[in-house]
Image (tube, rainbow, N blue to C red; front, side, top):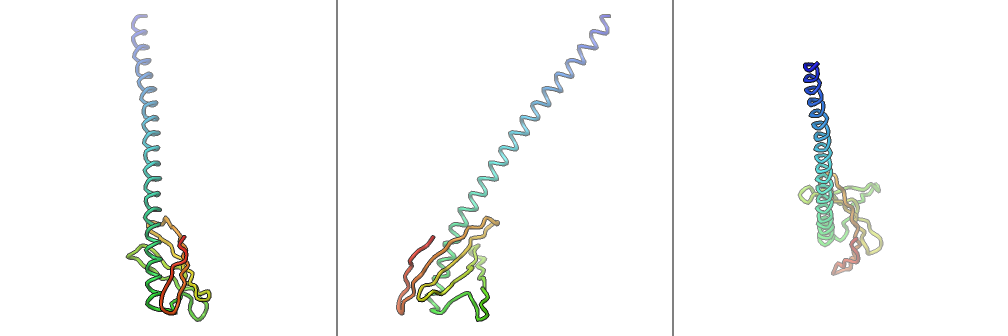
Length: 135
């Protein structure tokens, strides 16, 4: 009888060790998952912030193009919109539309697919250019 009792104690000890190991493994896995999720959210936020500034750089480039060419538009004679890609700035000029002497500019910062869209209005006069609004 004494011999059977020793075998039961070993089985109970192994069972307790396995249960505790399983619980620790689950806690460590959950902690790792939370850390990975936080890292992904922080990285996505950083990309969106970068794209915010890339979009403003693209607006600056569109304004520079307008300063060099008074008639600059992205809509061709077939009413098709031509997207101007600026890979060095990680952005695209989606649209420069003429409304009277005001040009409406729509751009997107598109680094790592965390797109940020920005809009600007520029007033063109004969000898100068006035930035009316940037959103």
